Amino acid sequence: MREKILLIDGHSILNRAFYGLPDLTNSEGLHTNAIYGFLNILFKMMEEEKPDYLTVAFDLSAPTFRHKMYDAYKGTRKPMPQELRQQVPVIKEVLKAMGIRIIEQAGLEADDLIGTLSKRCAQKGMEVSVISGDRDLLQLATGKIQIRIPKTKATGTEIEDYYADQVKEKYQVTPTQFIDLKALIGRYKRQHPGCAGHRRERRRTKIIVQYGSIEEAYAHVDAIMPARARESLRNHYDLAQMSKTLATIDLQVPYTLDETAARIENLYTPEALEL
Image (tube, rainbow, N blue to C red; front, top):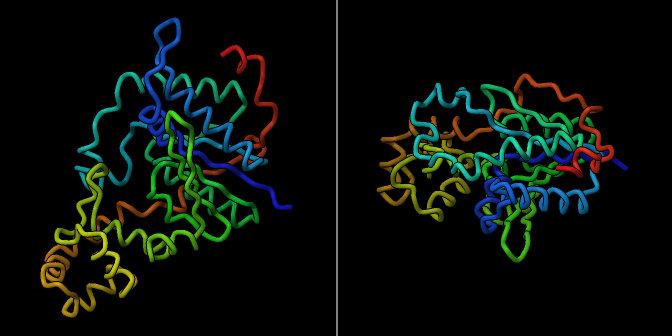
């Protein structure tokens, strides 16, 4: 039986838990709903996956290559609420007390760390499950890498599961082509500029299904219908290319995972139980 690693997108799951659960506080006034929801998702995934290794990736506030490429990257994203911000160092403390490996690096997004590690682990013959609330990570799905997207509600957590076949089934495109869909429509929260005139999902999907990529679509731009979509791609192809670069997860970042440190041991240490 192949060994399995579970890779968790830390901030993404914290956000899902924070907005999916009612506000909770402890006796000292510390907000705890994100911590509570995160741990519930973690334990649910551990029970279902039974992994041999576990790693949680977090973003840091330092600029990445995407910010340097495009000043407005994530510029419209609302600041993290203080009630959530105060829970981030606490969940990290809890994870460390449980002996769970945390990875983070200035200049790199958690997506890039997860993407690189998922690819390396799959190449070593491991099964890989990625837990994230961010559909951008669907581009990582293969026959060996599964993307699991939890939805936290007061009634419980529901999970959407995607290997490459499930991405194709739902979105009509491959995981790699999913990036091109992002390039056409852009993303408001991440401030990917996209390509004006391609806001209708059915229209952009049809273009990528037909041509396979924004580059190939541009090579046949005269044949694209309707006229508004054709002229939009013709006039804003540079924005679509930049948006594709911003949306593409880096699979070769300079980060080495020490697998022995990520191996799951006893999670319920005295320190963890006290916290």
